[in-house]
Length: 325
Image (cartoon, rainbow, N blue to C red; front, top):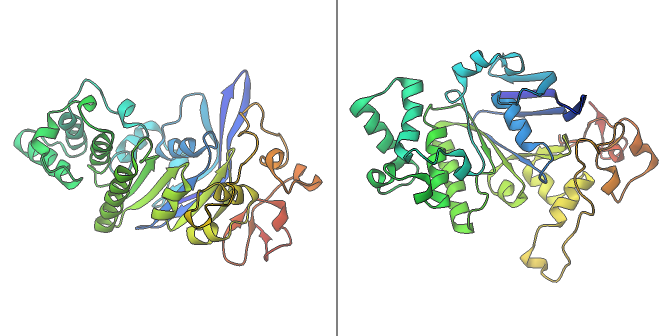
């Protein structure tokens, strides 16, 4: 369904061009779910915006391909994107309160999608809005359609966002932090809803999150992202149980574990570097890495291990069967 190959995105800032995403590669099959996980500022949402053709004017795709069902989206104009965005590929944006129009009722916002993509109006449109609200778990769709976003709970707003995103019957859905700011019960309901929608339509899904627990519950494969790099990519169960990249290892060590409640949680010292602080050469994680060595200041390629996962770390040049891509 989707194959991203060595995608490079840069931002024009302070009279210079700074890399935001570097050699980002991954794929998603029809009916599959891929997770992208990492701290804030790692490039997760920027990746989503690049896929959706929603980059700001000062941010450009420099090189690479975004192959979506045989089409290279990296070369698409905005006019071409308008033909497929919201219909063939769609997105649930993070922070429903700021993403929804505060001056429009929920039903009208959902209805816009059906008007634009299918030209519905009148009774047919009203019927579709109610059907849509019902499909995302509202037991009182008539009442919900008449409410403004501020009159809905966080979980309810997220369901409205999902209803809008799937209105065009997309083939690929990107969910950017779909459970942020929700309580645990609401999180589980939203994740279950997304999985049920996928099961009914063989939808390909990308879930972006800073919470690796959410990824472990929903995704068959995961990309661990750090400072614009995908540092590890493989099956979720393999990476969760036996992370290879030092950053993935540190992320998983920071997850609370009820079975090891006496064990001190791991801490990743330092912060994700800003665009101006990123090293021009070598590994972007080296400054925070406990395995740092002189070779880390040189070129770091992607290494394919025996189990099929890729790791962008010099440790795997001659380890675990690592072969450079």
